[in-house]
Image (cartoon, rainbow, N blue to C red; front, top):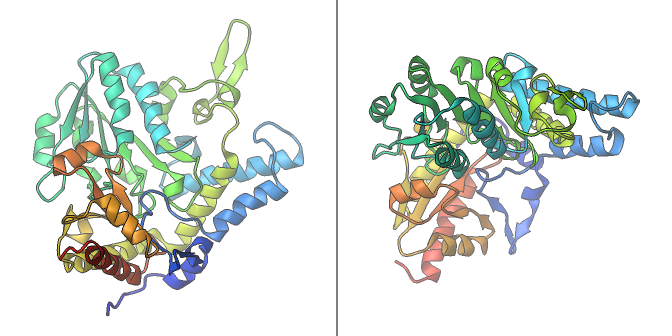
Length: 415
């Protein structure tokens, strides 16, 4: 029997998530795929419904009451997000559709404006495709060189290799704060300090860190940070690009039209101030308000408590799954060095088959390469199964996962 220290009332949290009350294939839903997209609590759903019911009108357009109410709520959402990540001002927060769009924005609006042939971008072997493919396209188009920081056998970044790879031609260093496969937590401080000393700017993919632990961009001193709302209790279709203001002001716009324009004549066009310069067209303001409500929810729990809860769950999952014969776990074995993500394989069972068999017991996990094919190539496997945890995950659900793997082995007659 596992005894868990409670950092907040998980049972009360679960009551805020209607979807968790349902049954799948006659079994209670065990949702272990939050790294892909988290579930949504009632305060987020209600905040968005309230806008649609009571205050829906286009923002920054009208001088009538509905538009002013929607605009105020939208602007407040931006302010909440700025406070949540420790940004110095709301002008540092650009709304995008997701982290992927934010990274593409940087590849087009920053890299294509400031990088030249022969320049270098330093990435890692841990990256999600969203922080790999935009740079690969850029490299092919502009003859820029991509270099990759390798992993240690434990699944951590090899910082000695990073020092060797960093040169006077390095213009961008970019890395995932937390790996979506191995769960590896990378300490940003030494990488950012060394990159800045070499004259490079730093882009941090915070998709798996901002939802799960305290993140302060000023303390981190990153130049850019990206994350997605749908992974942190918010809706789909809204993401965030944080950027230092001087860099945002120096960049050309990514898309044009709508709110990003301050003046258009027959022979001239002038861009709006940041962050609006990067927000063409009618914004996803209802989704932004939903993300603001998600930030309120997480802030009320406390991000230190969220991290502590997940570290405890991860420690238990590492212990519990290691007891199941045939299971191989990838990534750091120290729960303090990894987020609430565990990628694993089961001997003689393909991850897709395992996921399908677990679904019969109401257990939802991810199977495949998790948009990280290069990393899987390094691991020497085509696919892994992945269980991931969040604020609503309980130890009993990890027990259900372990028992479900045993059921799958019996069903396939694997000892």
